[in-house]
Image (cartoon, rainbow over all chains, first blue to last red; front, top):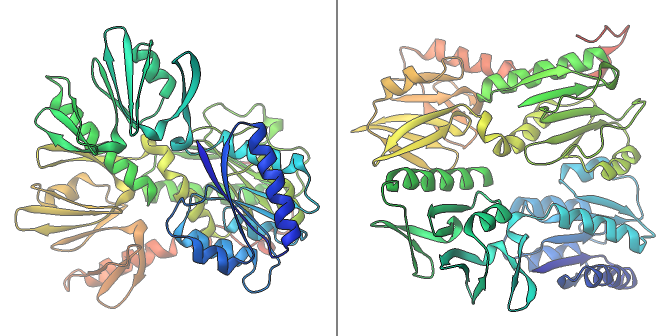
Length: 242
Length: 243
């Protein structure tokens, strides 16, 4: 998985030092991280194009122009999911930091272990779409992000994990995979199929039609129940986001 | 949803429990709130929300109170205490004295995780049985071939007439404000001379014949939230024992 991380601090030296610690932390944990550095709250906000663009934001409080707290307030109007970690010399904004649902508050001078602790917490509680499924395939262990799996199909003794870019074949049963995935986003719609409902575009006849055009069959005899289950899932999912 | 409340004052604990119960009643979220302290014994396993007062607490709250559907809320007055509390990774922190709107916002944020505790209504829509949590049902209007349900996310049409839907909804939480409209009292934000405004911004007209009674009920619903959580200064004097 690739983490998108932003660092916003008006002092170049502080930005660089924090970026290095984040980079080291991610490297030690085998995480691909894409870092972007910003010198002001205004610059950061103008770079945001969509919710979820950054998974983590390290944010200074005292900056010329918009303060870090005000930047976080404005960010929250468009993005509720980004983990905001304040990184500041001030200890005066602890109560306000909770108003913007910050994930952590680091007081400068920041040490490597502070960054490691904050990142470990984030990774442990990362949104489900960032969670991986660990499988042994092609003679090595690999992590497949759940968000990239369209559906899983059982053919003979093998499970074919269909992602948007490739198919991974593993020797595991569907019950075992369903329990490892443990996500309400995945529906066992057939004895041999597990489908990621996030990719379902609609129901056609007795199949789920996915966004890439593929079809996943639905158990005969349970079409109505599974159809209702899918519609309720859609409602629940969208409603929980509001 | 079960909420355990551990505040430094017995009166504060009791008030917070009352406020949570009121929220639970008004939102149709099955739940209860009770005062708790470590001296009373271990925290019950089925507690889903823990409110913990950081001021004057003799011990830290139970470690790792997290997981799906579990939320730790801390209360504090000082910035430094708030910063230190990040080590506990709470779901939120209230500045004392706790404001009712802050409490409502915090509980509203958690509601998605308590799906099984939400009272729901089943409606038939286009051949599908839909489960609609009452919390998310903002208002219902009568339409040509049944009713249109306005939820916090989408509009759902059903053939069931408004009269029948009204009979299935809890009377204390929903109100028929006009022959063709039914509103969720929890979502009422403003009351004017002839209409009410909901949290979604929708303005719903109130029928002439029922106007006085409906507007009074809506104002009562808004007033319910006042004074549930008294300011700290009223909390002076000898602290009563926990409930």
